[in-house]
Image 1 (cartoon, helix red, strand yellow):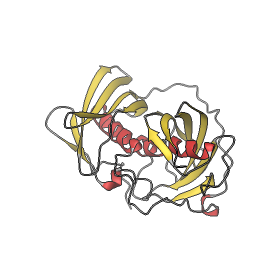
Image 2 (cartoon, one colour):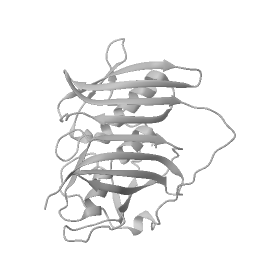
Image 3 (tube, one colour):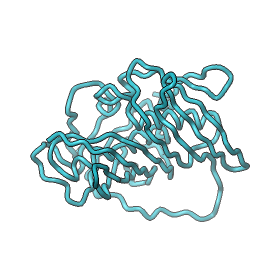
Image 4 (cartoon, one colour):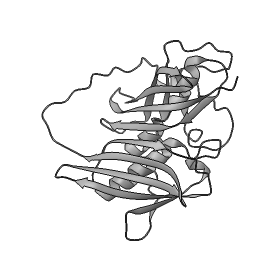
Length: 265
């Protein structure tokens, strides 16, 4: 089956300006019916790469307000600085006059003779040796549409906290999708899950306030290891990082995020 880029069939260009529209369905939302933050960032990446005709280096996005299934999310792109090797850009997503997401990014590629990766992945059994990650509901959503396998984390509300704040899961890449920055942005939005398991208690989570994705080397892989490390949770806000690894332990991208913690105790 030929692979396509995430959201390419959903996004459409509107007019001659740098404006794109994404009609939101439950497949772009969380189980609550609100736009999943990682999908909003993925859409921003997709339109930025198309408009700049350059690959993403990094993007940081702030989730300003909610958008719901049935609404149309319109993106406006501003290529603020176009150089020989890189482009600096920003994009804003709105529903009518309501701002939903605002993001800044660098796109480009440079050839240099030095490289290295010093991050180390969490130890994990093969994906099919891990139990299925059970969703809390049967509602169609971005996350529930994916096959997920639990490597490390809590299963029940009375399970003890993960004391070192590190959780992980395998996610199977849908066979019709490429492994690219837009799809990786979805998997970078799992800090709320990590925060929930780090502190224990109810099986709640939190609301993503932002996300930053830094692209390393996206390669085709059947499974992606989502390696989440919570650094802190104080005053109701959790900060964490996500490393995304291929099945062969190649680093695909890193993400960092802050979420507003919500307890369901």
